[in-house]
Image 1 (cartoon, rainbow, N blue to C red):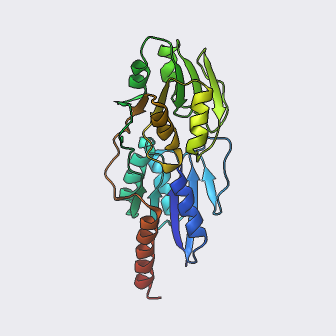
Image 2 (cartoon, rainbow, N blue to C red):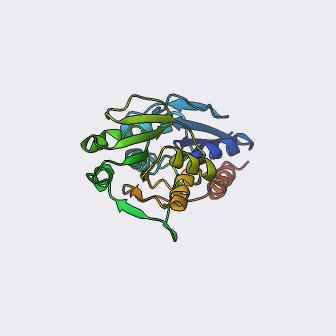
Image 3 (cartoon, helix red, strand yellow):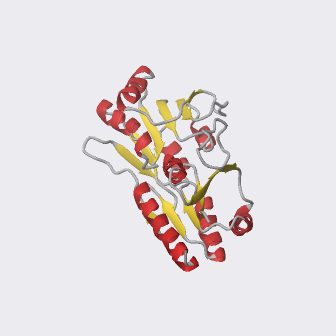
Length: 254
């Protein structure tokens, strides 16, 4: 009997974990997407798209599919889904693991301003009109309507029409390289970068490029997440799953 794993996706780590499990015998993994992007990269395992219907829906799914492990590999800013995962795991006694990159830390040469949320980021831009690289996706662009005097270049996975009078959208999916990011910032005459503190290696290059060019960065802090067993690396997640799988085999006496 295959060991059934539900992966709550949204990060490259979630996809990488699904790819690893697809190559390993004895696992039946399903990767769940929130459905917030249109250009979905189809994974090599069964997948589903959309919400579960809150904690009750996730509980019902875990029980119906007889999931033996739940892996939260959502974006660190998807706080509600992480909370639902913790509660559903408790109610179903499903082992839960969170895979989370550590937040980015400044190094010599960085000019970072840390803010608590998107409203703080909009306020930190100041009154003087500036050319802003807004690397936050599309869902929270509305927070910058109060700072409509700026020229925004918004990077998102999918193209969309922003509700900002002086904004353009750059539809791109990472990973991004330092040389390309530096060229982009120079070509667009960017004066300040705004980013979530995602911590993902695939999107760090914009911060390195800002450092090289001496540009200020406004970095939005992660929301607080509920306590859960957490690892930073896919290898650690695979080890955790392997131990659970082996324990389930021993309980069955196989």
